[in-house]
Image (cartoon, helix red, strand yellow):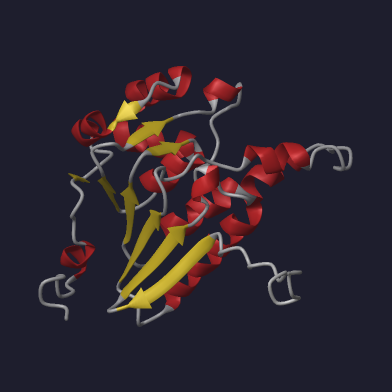
Length: 219
């Protein structure tokens, strides 16, 4: 039996960034688990847009930033960046700086500038931009398996995505240098001791920090 035209229809891919709003909570979910939730430019721009909307909305009391899959975020999607270099025009003086300002740093600034509390819920690895995305949030809730990695040095890159601003303010200059220079994995327990993580548990209820009813009374 030959397949019909209906059977041959392609199933649309799920959105790479999911958004939900309910009971005062705006939930933004990274949804590229097959790519360890690496953030491509279009996903970055969508997150910035959603944060701006949440910041301005009277219906939003808190923003929760989370992800699907085993990893929180592997950072920027470097495969997409590398793939675009072949067709890129010759660079001019100042192009690199402008790219940084318009890219990952703009995403970090959107988190820092949000007028609502932003909570990161981290499971698995948060690397590079992914780690800084969590550090920019007001609160970071981590699973036992969570880890944070300054992966820039492992790729021969200068620390980007607001890391040079965030890290010294979160852990002090000496520890920031250690993390940035060596790229060692920082596990959840040590992140908690350093103050990068405020809660290390799987069942944290974000409603408690914003004056909202908790899960047991929010029915």
